[in-house]
Image (cartoon, rainbow, N blue to C red):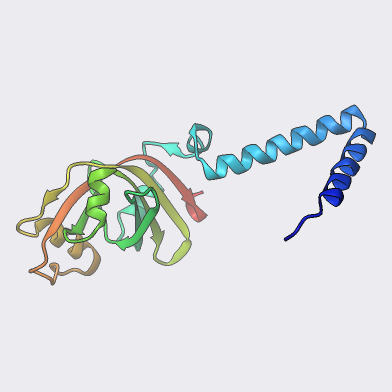
Amino acid sequence: MIVNRATARRDVIGLSYEWAALTTTSRELIRIKLAKLAHSRFDMLNPGPSRLDRMTAMPLPTQVLDLLRLPNPAVMATVAADGRPVTVATWYLLEDDSNVLLGLDATRVRIKHLKKDPRVSLTVLASDDWYTHVSLQGTVSEIVEDVDLAGIDRISRHYNGDAYPDRESPRVLTRLAIERWHGWGKLK
């Protein structure tokens, strides 16, 4: 788009006259509204402590634990090396210590993501009402080889009652230590 300097200058001067015509109180209200708008947009794009504090820290209430104990659909998010979020559907198993066991294919790129940045978000959706869900945020512990596939077998039995069918692909296990959570729908 080509901008005529004279037109642009006239428009800016016109805005200046309009701004000058406002009362001091009106100008101050506009400044406050603009500052709030800029802050809210910054807050959404850059979740700092003020945004994170809206999530609830541990412990998890009974109704959240009840949802997590069921074999529900889940989506795991990791952070790629370039900072972009990467999500993938996954199985999980809530353990007695309230950590979440994750059995992962050892050949997937998310293992590299986790080794570089152990932060994870796991969203678990109620299988009968996807509006009801809980998002867990935390860090994963060490990533260990699931040599005898005992870990993935536990998770598979939780979901479908049988041992994990693929006995050839290498698997790894890690545990998500939940630091914060946020519920929605019936968990709100």
